Length: 182
Image 1 (cartoon, one colour):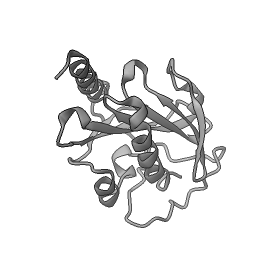
Image 2 (tube, helix red, strand yellow):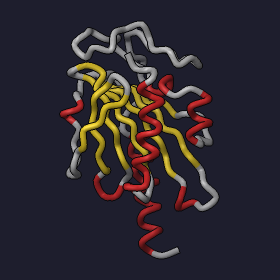
Image 3 (cartoon, one colour):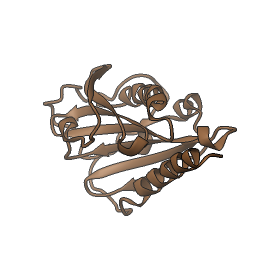
Image 4 (cartoon, helix red, strand yellow):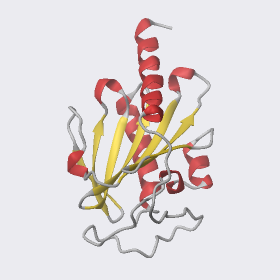
């Protein structure tokens, strides 16, 4: 393996570790939105100005069939704090350099406009939700941020070596997550 590939692989693993270590486990007050196997949305209006539940549990935003369709090879690892709920899954490929992680994070008090990246942001619309798509800094993958309310968002990130190539993965995962958003 070349030094360049090792560096990219290392960056992918470090990015995943940072996401896992970024918060501590805590009980968060509020109402969780449970995942279902149906394609129907929760009964809460999708209008971003409508008050939403205090908490969206990130691990509930991908069902077992979603995980299977996305090639996820492990159970989601949850990390919740007072201001966010995150879940990290791994997609293992035969060649380790082709493996990547998928992260879903609900930010209770950060809007789509608060997404920080030095890369260009492209507007996207998935289902009823507006958002942005951008490459991660330092070749760390691709992110799709979807508006839940005017002051909250869900980020769907594909983390690995080929940032541009992972945008298709991030968009596919975001489409599945969006189906469960209020």
